[in-house]
Amino acid sequence: DAKTTQPNSMESNEEEPVHLPCNHSTISGTDYIHWYRQLPSQGPEYVIHGLTSNVNNRMASLAIAEDRKSSTLILHRATLRDAAVYYCIPVVNTGFQKLVFGTGTRLLVSP
Amino acid sequence: DGGITQSPKYLFRKEGQNVTLSCEQNLNHDAMYWYRQDPGQGLRLIYYSQIVNDFQKGDIAEGYSVSREKKESFPLTVTSAQKNPTAFYLCASRAGRLAAQETQYFGPGTRLLVL
Image (cartoon, rainbow over all chains, first blue to last red; front, side, top):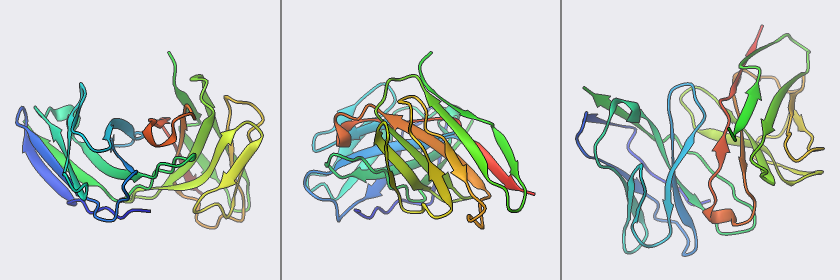
């Protein structure tokens, strides 16, 4: 399993952009990078994933470094509902999908 | 609405007792998972099933058992052999066709407490 390093916590103000970094220097060439988030006392929810190119969806953008050793989740305008723990997870490209959750980054959003 | 349901929301276990946590999905997904989460920690994989009547141990299967007799159901039994069962238990599913690209959908969780 590829190892990930994320900041323990980050803070943001409401309606400001947030950049959540993740280091995954041991990722293999075919591993996808998934991001999930977990609100307090809830199950995780999918945010976004990518392989090599930057990706956008209605929730966020994912910027992947050219060497794929790091990625950044971008929330364009943070809201109070975005306060959660964000997990960066490399996913091995085999027939079985195993999500390995680290401790993630706790995002605090202030009004 | 399609999704995953888990019951009960809270469950209390007495010493030496087996308890079963329910997980049901109506997403027509082939693969289902059980995870355990301890306070301040990430999720850890207990068991997974890629198809009906088949399941495999995850990283922390000792003291747990599962069954997969129906596609939509994947119950988890916490046996008396699990000495530290107090945790938040999460069930998840995914379609099962494009492993690395697929999303896992999680249920709301069951919080198990030992009396």
